[in-house]
Structures are given as structure tokens and as C-alpha cells.
Image (cartoon, rainbow, N blue to C red):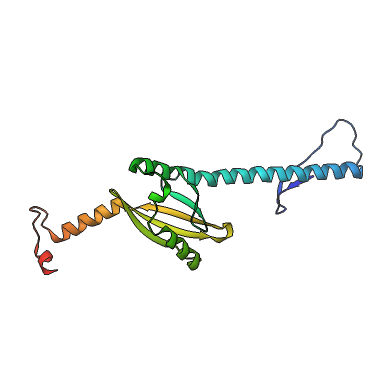
Length: 178
């Protein structure tokens, strides 16, 4: 008797082995079908549980800061990267990590529906870009941080290199022309 998932795909079979002759009583067959259906549901539940755990680990193990907010902007959960960054910067509370205009960004995210809304925030020597994404089917907003610190340092160095002599550090003619 086949065990099926919720899309009617065969997950396996229930087989009964016995040294005695089995009568194919309709009641016994119905009981085996019920057992096969319940076993299929249990296997499907275990598969979904494993997938959910894998998805949860994405945010837990992610080195980037991730925050889930409700539609009013209140933090529902955050990943360990947020805690590590708050400790490193000596901050208390997630609000200190988020942009000052967080409430306005939430409202803009709700208006834009499918578009991402972004804002930058500088804290100490760090520069973060916060990206807000509406998850309307979950009544949540996912907020992702991208650390732009190294990018900004490289940008500053390129700007300096473009307008200054590499050997002397003095301004070059391009600097004076601009």
C-alpha cells in the first residue's frame, strides 16, 4: 500500500509479511490504508521540519545583521550578528543600530510594497546600508544590513589616489583642474 505526500507523490510503501495466509478482508485493507496515510503525513511533517530548520540556520549562521520587524516597525527577532555588533560597538538596544529615520522607512516600505527601501547609517568607524523588504504574506518587514565599511575605505583611497601623486602625496594637476 503506497504512502503518499500531500501532492500524492509516493514516499514509500507499507508491506505486511507473514508466514500465515492473509485474507484480504476489506476492513484490514482499510486499516492498512489509514496507517499508510498517517505514515505519509508523518514523513512529510519530518521533511518540512528539516527544511524549516535549514531555513532558520540561514539567518542564525549569517554573518550579516538580519532583523524581522512587525508592520509598525517593532523588532520581532534579530539574528546573533546583531548582538555581536552591538557588543562590539558598546550599544544597548537594536534601535541604536537602525537608521534614525527607521519609522519613516517602515512607512515607506509599506507604501512601496514590492520595492526595497534603503538607508545608510554610520556608527563609529562602521558604515551600514539597511535594506527594508516587505513580506506582506507574513505581516513582517525583513531588514538586512550590508557592511559598507571596507567599500567606503576603498572609495576614499581611490579618490585620494586620483587627485594626489602616489610618491609624494601632493595634489596632482587633476586636483587643481577639478
